[in-house]
Length: 358
Image (tube, rainbow, N blue to C red; front, top):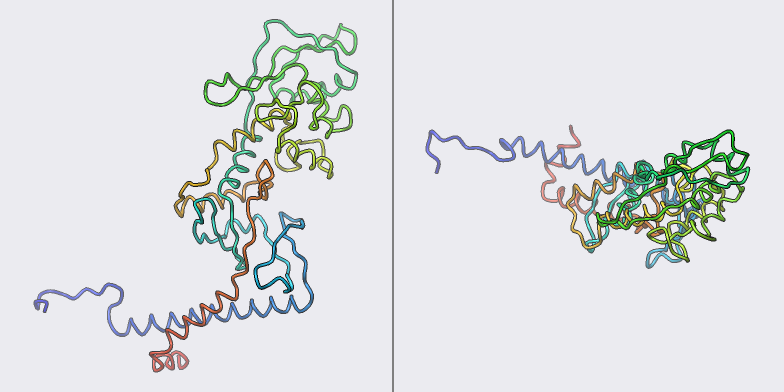
C-alpha cells in the first residue's frame, strides 16, 4: 500500500471515466474504418460487375500493359484495373522487409506491392548520374583536326553546349574550307581507374556518335546497335554485344522517343553517349543498396519516397522491374476490422449502448 503522502500515477488514463471515453473513441474509430472498407469493397465489386477487366498500371499519366500474374485461387476471377502513379509513392505505408532484398508496402488504394530495394535505389542513382555528372575534360597538347561531313559540322555548331556537357571542346577556324573548320582541343575523361571506377576511353570517333544522336543522320537507333569504334556499349564503354541499359534505349528510340535525349523524353535533359550510359548504369549498380542488406523502417521509407523523384521508376537501367503487385488487401483489412470490432464490443455491451445514446 502506498503511503498517504504518495500520489498514484496512472500510466495511460486518470480514472474510470477516461477508460470509458477511450473505449468509446476506439469503437467509433473502428466503425468508421469498417464503413470506409465496406464502401470501398462495394465499389470494387461494382466495377468488376460492370466488366472492368483492364490490367494496367497508370504511370505518370499513361497506361502501360504489364504482366500482373493472378493470385492463386483467383485465376478465373475478373481482374479490375490497378492504378499506380508516382504520387502514390509519397503515401505508401511500409509493411516491412522480405528476405533482406524486398520492401513490402501498401498504397492508398489498399494494394500490397513488393519493391526490389536494389533496383529502386539503382534507377534513382542512375538518373541522378545522368542528370548531374559533369564529365571531365582532358586538354590536348595540340588541336586535333577533324574531317567531318557537312551535316556533322553543322550539328556540332548548332549544339556546341551539348558537346561541352559531354566533355568535348573545339576550336573553329573560319579560314579553312568547309568540313575542316573544327578541331578538337579537349576530349572527355572519366578518370584513371585508381578510385575503383573503371576508366572509359573516349576519342574523336565519339564526336560522330554524338552527332548521330543529335540527328545528323536521322537515325538515332543505329548508334546504339554498334558498328565501329566509338560505339562500344559494355560496362566500361567497350564490348561487342552491347549493354542492357543501352539496348533498352534502342527500344525506346524505336517506340517514338525523340532524339533530344538518349535516356528518355523526361529522364535526362543532356544527350549522353552510349559509352557514358553504360558507364553510369554500371556505377549506379555498384553504388546501390545490395540484396542482403537489412534496412530500418526509415531507410525503407526513404527508398520508396525517392521513387517519386525518378522520371521512369518502373524498371532499373538494365530492365529489371523495380516493383510488382502482390494482391489487394481490402478483403483482409475488412475481415480484421470486423474481428477487432467484435472483440472490443463483446465484453462491454453496456458501454457500447452508451455510444449510440451519445
